[in-house]
Image 1 (tube, rainbow, N blue to C red):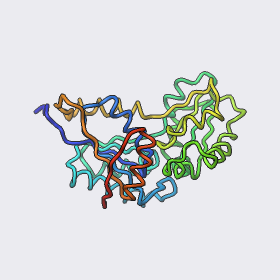
Image 2: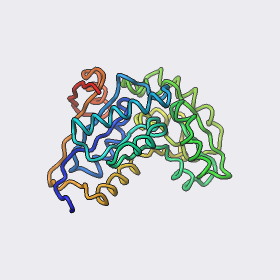
Image 3: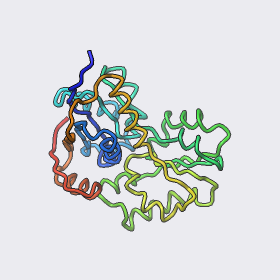
Image 4: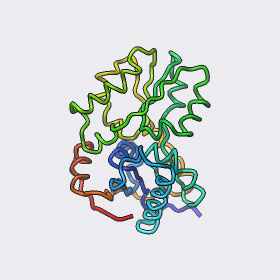
Length: 268
């Protein structure tokens, strides 16, 4: 039976504040939905963890969303966690689970030069998922796959335009500086917050591409087809949670979202 008043929240998680870039797009497209955002900052960075560690953490987070918040859907707002844990999650749980993968396919479809670049965490860069995305979509193309250690950590601290960030960006982006790429894929949900800084090293006509909008559209489609769309006519609410220090999270999240954020610390 169609449920027109399904006001249960959508659980959204990341290792930290990066997933807020996905949450922004979700709230734009689905303003009436309720969300629970969890930053697993106790275990950040995900980009340097093993597959078994990532799967174990993902199990605990999804259990938390279901048991504590009766979530109707889960969005993994983290490329690294998606690459290593989404298959295991979908085997274990019956609710819809949507992942985040680098926007390689749209970049390959849009490129005119036949060359693209992907920047991501070291774990995503080495993952089977990214390798397959490139193999399936970039036949005959030149693809620069650049793993970027410590960029995720910089954003976690709210450092999006300081000297340390520029040292890191200059180091990683020099690998593509003289290439013929026309699309740079931001393969970590933390990286959209670095767009302004990235633009100092990657000039137009190169376009920056992330997956936030596509994820939000996919969530909207699945809500509709699974009869999970809220029946509310008013603006939805968002609960902000962290496994780390709530004061620090609130400060950094507030800076990134340009508004006051109140969060609380939870155990998973």
